[in-house]
Length: 173
Image 1 (cartoon, rainbow, N blue to C red):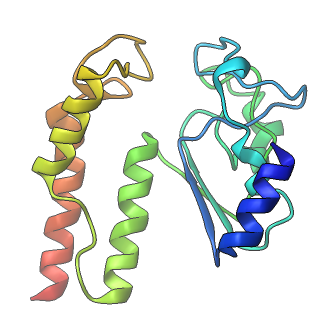
Image 2 (image 1 turned 180 degrees about the vertical axis):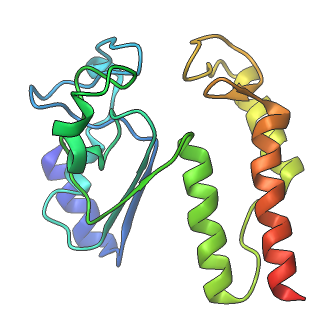
Image 3 (image 1 turned 120 degrees about the vertical axis):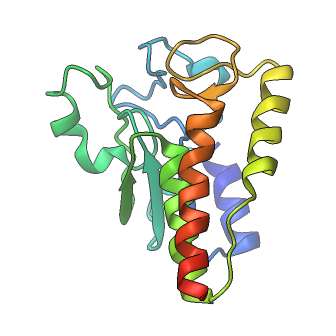
């Protein structure tokens, strides 16, 4: 995994590396989901792309994501977060109630800088979530196949995106 990551970095030479809701390794080198289940055998070691890089961003919500290593000691003391926090650090950490929402916020900020709305449409986002559930993806909080994100239903998730679209539209006018 380390060699594979080095090859990717050498070939692409990214200016910045961003991780959203990507499970990060713990101090023991294992990977755990929010339910504290060991998912090491099913998790690509993406952390190696972040190690030693100057411009990295992590977006997370529960403590087990790449970037939450910035706050690993604090996360251990919060009973509602993971027991085994990720240790992979980033230069900039975005913490959100739902990682997707943190990503939407980042995209909205980049939209403001660029002067054009880069956010996905609300309908496109709903369709992507529907398709992922059809393909077997489960909700991050319940572990069930249902339309939603981290315990929030499809409409609640869509409302966050819709509000950011309204904010950007107000900026444009």
